[in-house]
Amino acid sequence: MRLSLILLLLISISSNLRQQETVPTKEDLARAPLVKIEELLAHPERFDNQIVRVNALWVNGYHGAVVCPIEDKKRCIGVIAWPDTERGKDMKRVLDQNLKSGPSGEFWDMEAQLSVVGRFKDTKERARNNPRFVLEVQSIEGISPKPTESKFKHHATIVTNYDKAKDQTAVLMQWYDVVWPSGFDIYNRGSAVDREKYDLDIQAAFSYPGRVIRSTPKLVQLELRVRHPGQAFLKSTDMPELIVQVDGEAISFGRTELVRTKTFVDVEDGQLSYEQLSAYFTYAGLQRLINAQKVSMKVGKIELKLEDRHLEAFRDLATRMLF
Image 1 (cartoon, helix red, strand yellow):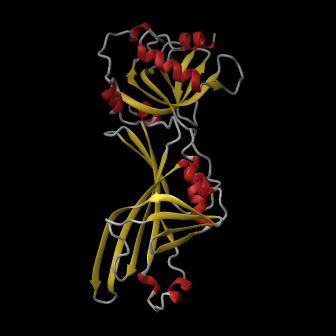
Image 2 (cartoon, one colour; image 1 turned 90 degrees about the horizontal axis):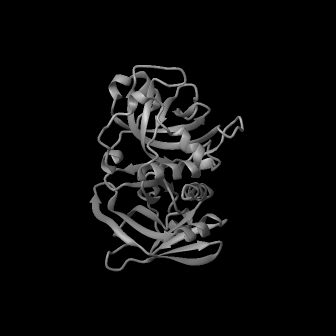
Image 3 (cartoon, helix red, strand yellow; image 1 turned 90 degrees about the vertical axis):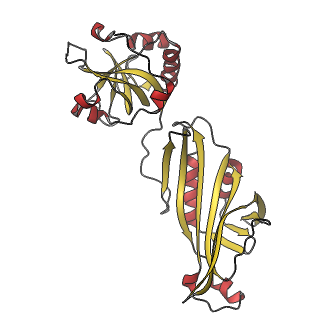
């Protein structure tokens, strides 16, 4: 019965909109610019008859379906879908998976946060219960609700980027500093070098196809970049494993790969080396890391200890791998 109700809600709002037009291709939909509903309402002449994408709150109301700004259900536009096509059947499936009961609890009051692509139209008219602005929907995808203030205590920056050319989304924890080496390490090396000559940062990322995550990614990429006095530690022909100490237990996270290396002589600081390496490990490996109390890493001569702030950043990243 629920699917039948959704079908009824998706039927054409106005006979004036039943015009024969070229159905946009998948490539057209992928290239649709992301536009806020507020922009569509403020500048309808700019977007009239254009294919656009909106991240919105889809509301199945008593008089039909509308899409609204996620935090404002007073400024909405109507939606029209074509349920008799294969594309329409896919959209109904997404709706059925995502729609939840709205505030009233009535059977017709259902909502979902969705990414919707369609042709925006200004009908220039407004009849009773028929909105002036509508979106002829061509594609619907679920999106995660707007995150609340992070419960994780760290200062790392985590960003999400969608690549249209690859149709892939990457989630990246940007470079995050690590205290390296410790004073004890410098003492053991028998050196009185300036601390500023040493630097180490870590970065982690994962990716998934499309704009919406539909399964937990299998791999996490970790990168380390270091600056230190003397010759380079790493050689591309003999890269060491990434050994992670998890609460005292040594675990191999696989062999690393050299991204880049450079050694030069500075007039004031003498010989300096810059090196960057990467390693890939599984989501299960990430779970071992984030559930630990104490974590340290070793890659050849490079040893570092992760603080609570680093583990919190990895925990934050891990939550974004769930769907």
